[in-house]
Image (tube, rainbow, N blue to C red; front, side, top):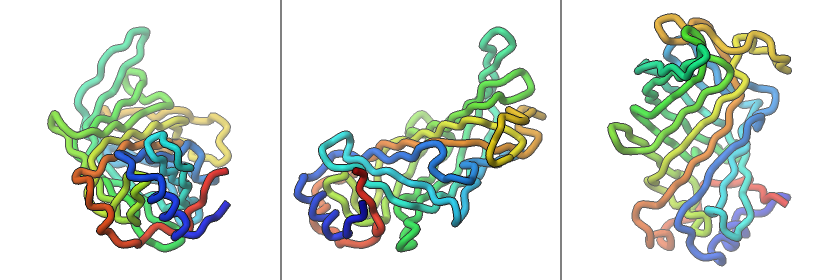
Length: 237
């Protein structure tokens, strides 16, 4: 069900100010496209203008309805090998430092809603001694040598704990169906990817999901912020 933007803001304001927001998208959100692709140390999104990601915005499990926004997802990061930990039975956890950025752009207005820059976060992939299997995960939280810088550039949504400016928090991406086929629809062919010098030695593709927890560093300034950005928002039934 579509609702007008001013009605959305009124609903958010009436519910009071949230302390935090939960942002997420599910695997398969960009129908007809893989979420991720990569080769060697480089990883990028595999989505495009014809495969928007549905970004869900939640008021930290509060009473407001989840907002679902059609967005263009853009991402790129690089991997730096750290170590592989034996798990037994011939399996290993391959561990990397990951640095890069990702963003979500509203498909209707063209407004960039959220931008995240990160350094020295953790990427892990389970595999054999010289391969990744079919899953992986990117985890980002600040501290202990890692940085995560989040900026919300959409509208002020007080009820959802979002206001233009810097945010604090962490994020995670899960990857599934890692493969070197790239076929759509995917039938399970060419699962996983081989490694050379501990990095993928071929172009790979995967599905992915996302979640993030955000806070506004300086609460109390939301009433001063104008109404801009975020349009084309839909409310879940």
